[in-house]
Image (cartoon, rainbow, N blue to C red; front, side, top):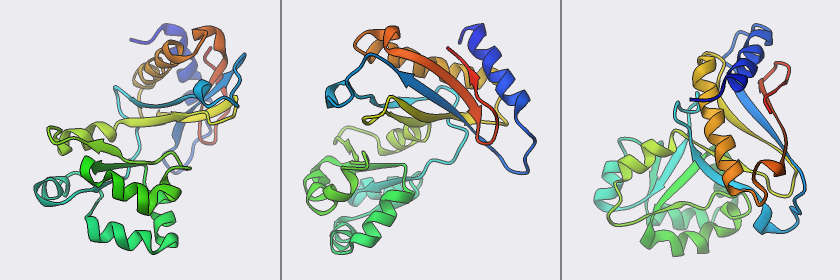
Length: 212
């Protein structure tokens, strides 16, 4: 359970947000300090499973064949085989469109080399290389878990954002999601909490409220 300060901040962000006729995302803005982000080893790049989900649809594409592909069809947004992969390698515009509209990719481990060859230059810079699916992995479990995952990525910027829910979720559920992200950051950063300058929460169109 998140501490009361986080939940109070989320409650204020939800209450202060102007009424909209669409479902808004709730986002977290994280500001780092005392880190040389020109050094890639200091950058944040984490896939974090949120306990209460992202509050949004997450688009997942699976590269697979055979039985794995059949099972993936029930849970993934699209399933692509080796022939489709090769076609994407010959059509850079289609590959870029796919990368832009997809949140996460999953691929059978034995396809990763071909994915690197055909799509590495498109997916790599976007931080969207697939999660390898090992022979013992259950593709259904992997995809379902990734539907509740957000990618927290700073690149070379001290300020970066990630979604933590939607405005129709409870403040408690959103604050629990935030707590998981903050704890992961504190564990991974070189100086832990000392590398976090400030954190703000806001709805898409609403004002920012400081969390920490």
